[in-house]
Image 1 (cartoon, helix red, strand yellow):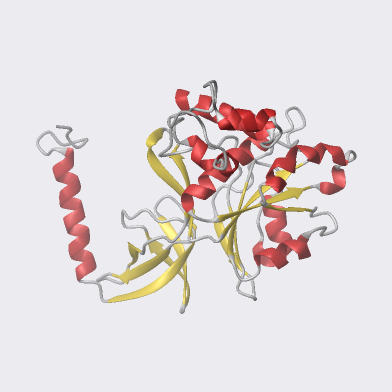
Image 2 (cartoon, one colour):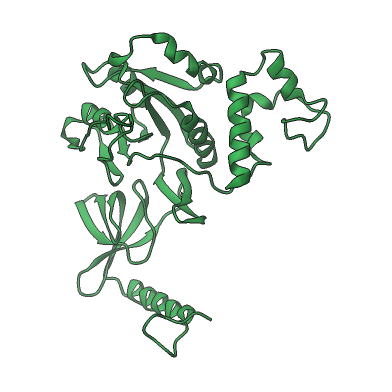
Length: 321
């Protein structure tokens, strides 16, 4: 049995249980409880939007993320803590960095996840879109793809690589923060909804949030000239509410996005275009088996080959994760 650091006689599990019981007793003696919505989080504290305005609260050992609906508790002595996280209706999550068996929830209670991609700086990378689409399906929200920095694009045929997503019926918009191109269309699609902006570093998520809500004050940055990669400017998620009820959540840029609670045998269920085609074997992997309806559909042009290649790539990557 592990023991707590600095103690030679108390097992770690016993110490944790004792701390949890102490927290429960403190919550039971709370002088007041009231609801709130988490708008920002640090390692130990959170800022919550409440009927009384913004309230800072200690996390009190309870994991909470931006978008969470919580119950705040005022303890004896006046300290405010996050006492409870109410059940999440949707979420976007991935494996915890460094602890792949644990879930890292990025945002909660969102209606739409806006996958922001860009052209030129950084260049368009559809591979991340495939991973996000799976995670969005797992979490219960709806996807929307926004192609940013359109003013930099000289050859519009470069966008043809996104045609398979249009074929799937995924909502897709184009625009640029330079001149506000496409922002009215974007607002029209998300009005009244809670939306999270996700994507590679440097694609312009924070610039879009600033354009839609000028007083958001999100930091923006340039792209590394040597590698065409985004420079991290947003380091934590933050929530911003528009006057019409639309909620915008900006998230930190990422370089990669893992998938959780999923292995290579399950990935096909997240490619809806596969479901219309039957195979000879019930456990078909759609990779080499005779009588595979998916392979036949790819060869007949009924399934986009780039999507099939994405499936094979994800299946291979998941088998090695």
